[in-house]
Image (tube, rainbow, N blue to C red; front, side, top):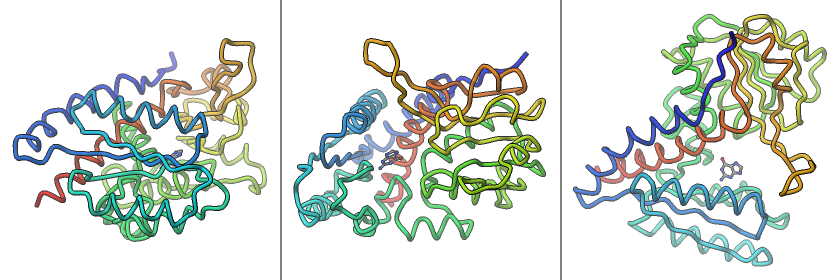
Amino acid sequence: MTEIIDGNAVASQIRDDLTAAIETLADAGARPGLATVLMGDDPASQTYVNMKQRDCEEVGIESHHVDVDGDASPAELYDAIVDLNDDPDVHGYIVQAPVPDHVDYREVIRRVDPIKDVDGFHPENVGRLVAGDARFRPCTPHGVQKLLETAGVDTEGKDVTIVGRSDIVGKPLANLLLQKAEDGNATVTVCHSRTDDLGAKTRSADVVVAAVGVPELIDGSMIGEGAVVIDVGVNRVDADTEKGYELVGDVEFESAKEQASAITPVPGGVGPMTRAMLLYNTVKAASLQED
Ligand code: GUN
């Protein structure tokens, strides 16, 4: 029987575990605060931001939100960032991506105080992660690691193939799994859109992580028997539903499930974990700033 890895259940446990730490910080006068910054009105981003605020409420993190007009200048967004850097009630914040085309997201990230960079995107935090001294593990890779851990998957010595080389998921996850650490020590292959014979690389892997943003790119014929499959993809595809779309992963679930020993569903796999790890990083940021 293939195990369906329940991201909602694991995320719920993580939120429960965080609640006690949050109350301890609050008792010491430092209730953790998380801010979200949204520039423009992309509906998917709005949904994500709303969910993050709801998550905060549930665990006792104070949530703040800043809207920046989609037509505003980059300088207006930078001003909002300066204010958040200076705000002692905000221990961590994220600038929701994507930003409008006239704004360079890298320039934005460079202005975030690294100690408040709960996404882990600032070059200082990227450098620390690559050097094996992560301050904030980026939320999705950290969520993937937690899912592997709770599913009892030890990556030591195992072949892990990651499909996708993004700065947010593929690259940081590859670095984390490669490290000499309890949740690392893997042999990591990173594939991307130019990879020759992708199927050969995924089929030979003990663990396949799909984070490429192509609906159902990876099907059962590309999964080795007994492999663990982690699907990071969240793709909106047109469908005859009330909303006019449905969410599918980067993995064709039904055929991959036939091959896998364990697999994450979409939705309900990695997504809730990403949100839980953002709360985790916020609590960590508050603890670091309290000292
Ligand atoms: N947009 C999609 N995923 C993310 C994320 O992890 N952080 C931010 N800031 N924006 C995103």
